[in-house]
Image (cartoon, rainbow, N blue to C red; front, side, top):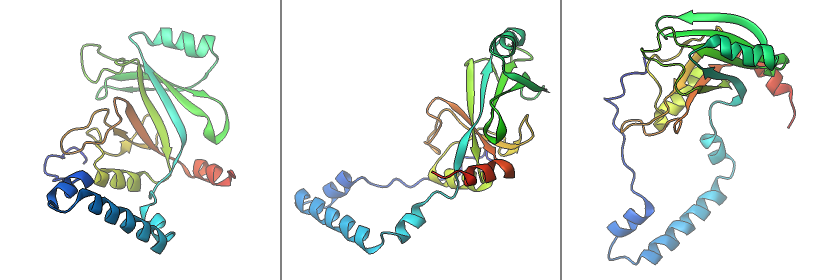
Length: 210
């Protein structure tokens, strides 16, 4: 669904410096003064409505999961369950995603953090869930579909596959660790999983006062 990025055209918006150069022989200082004055006028004329228009149409509610990989899941389980005491919840295996994982939990309540320990079914094939070993980070999102639509319009690159059911049963999508020409925004080297928060997590978040 989200894999066909090649047909999207992004319009390059000139910077203030480029605009100033295009306005020659107008004095650059005059241009900058006018730009500053315009910004001040806009701030006075729409202090509330502009902020609402610019607000994100989604919220990040917290850390949903951390996933680590290795060639030996037994060694990971010995560390995270037997030694550190995280709670084992369930297991998940997918030939398509080349993953054999145990789902653990740290903490309690609606904001308990899922901990995934993963090993590849075939270490020679992709995706390589053990590379890097600190594999990805998951975030609770209150409205995943709206979030993906908004970020896509801003130029965020997602991995192929679109929104789909994750190992824990929630809808998920992944932000690509690297951008490209069509979609320059990315996870800046980190694979980020966005997870649709269930109603009880959203309610718990809304019940907490800042």
